[in-house]
Image 1 (cartoon, rainbow, N blue to C red):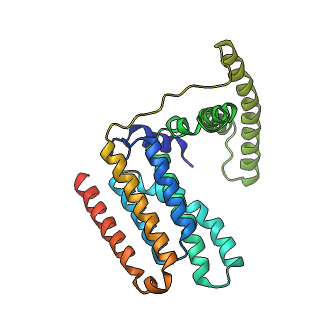
Image 2: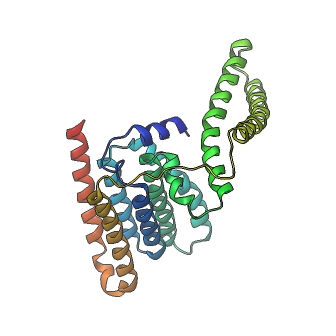
Image 3: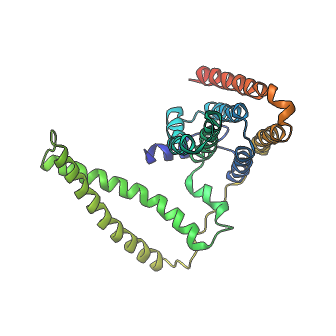
Length: 265
């Protein structure tokens, strides 16, 4: 997983979704996750997934990265689904639930700087938990850079090409070095924070909504998805024959978003 690519997409993007307030995105995420939980219709779930892909395409996020990150949960969901689901249709629904929920979550990660994602969360979780999440994000970059440097230095000093065992040994040595470095990094960060007057809470200023209409439109779109999933769940006997209708609308949205992205390229 390329954490630096995720961070570049979140901090350097200038699309309409990037300027939506993080709190509005979190509200939309909650509505979409509720939609995934409520729905057991494969076509409705596919419509939600296609709609999220259309949003990502119009927001100009890296589609390859979006799909790669969203398909990780599908692997585990597929193992669980095909081992326990009584039919292939229910197994497909379980996989679609995992992919759709992952798409919604990854879209927020790719369009919102990490500290701003947790700024609203800090108001409802203990201070230590919120600060730990923020510091963990920073540590990912430092440890990834350290691991890359150690592996590079090992390969320069003793090439390991052609020997899988030597390659595994070198990787293990690099991981051990990073483990020791992480312990030293944690102690050093703690000492620095105490010296600078840390008192149990890192204050992060929340990003305010600069375009309220976009915020309202995003929440309304997520609410529409939830209403559709709920309606098809309650009135499934009547509406199941028309399950292709939400999917058709979502595919039209996806095609329009693709055309928009192609013309902006």
